[in-house]
Length: 237
Image 1: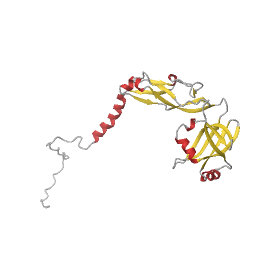
Image 2 (image 1 turned 60 degrees about the horizontal axis):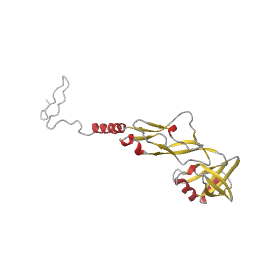
Image 3 (image 1 turned 30 degrees about the vertical axis):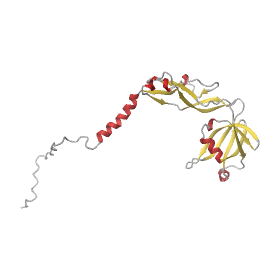
C-alpha cells in the first residue's frame, strides 16, 4: 500500500465566489473532497502549505491522508486552479479513495540506458512522443514513473508501449493500438533543418551578388525612340 502524506485541513462553511474570496483573505485556499459514495465536503487549506505541495512536484499523483477537523480520510488531488498572474493556488479538488479504487493518472516516462543506444552514440537524437502516459492504476499502487529502456535503439527505430514493463495492475487507457512512446532520429535530419535557414540568410545578406572588383556596372539600355537629354548648359531656344 502506498504511503500517504499527512495533510490537515479545516471544514469550510458557505459556498460560492463570495465565500471563496473570504477564505482567501484569511490566507487559506478553498477546496472540496468528493467521491467515494459520500457527499462533497467543502474544506480550506493553508495557502503556504498548498503552494509548497504543488510546486515540489508529483502533486496530482500523491495520496494524502487528510485530517478534516479530527476525521481522517484518504484522497488524491484531482485538479487545482492557479491565479493567471501570480501563479498561486486559488482552489483544489480531492477525490476520496476507497479500498479497491482504480483511478486515471498521467504517469511520467523516464528514459534509461542512453549509453546503450547505438543511434545516440552516433549523434542521433531522441524524439519523445509521450512524456506521460495516461493509465488506470490501483489507488494504493500509483507508479512514480514508467521506465523506457533505450538499449539497442538505432536510427529510425521506435519504442512502443508494449516494450515497456508496466507495474502490476496498471494498464494504459489507450488499448486499441500499440502507440509510440519515443523514436530515434538520425543526425542528418537536424543538419538539414539547420542548413535551410542558414542558406536563406546567406542569400539575403547585403553584397551577396556584388560584381567583381573593378568591373563597370552595366548601363541601362535606353528605350527605342527616346531622345537624348539636353546638356545642363544648353539654352532653350
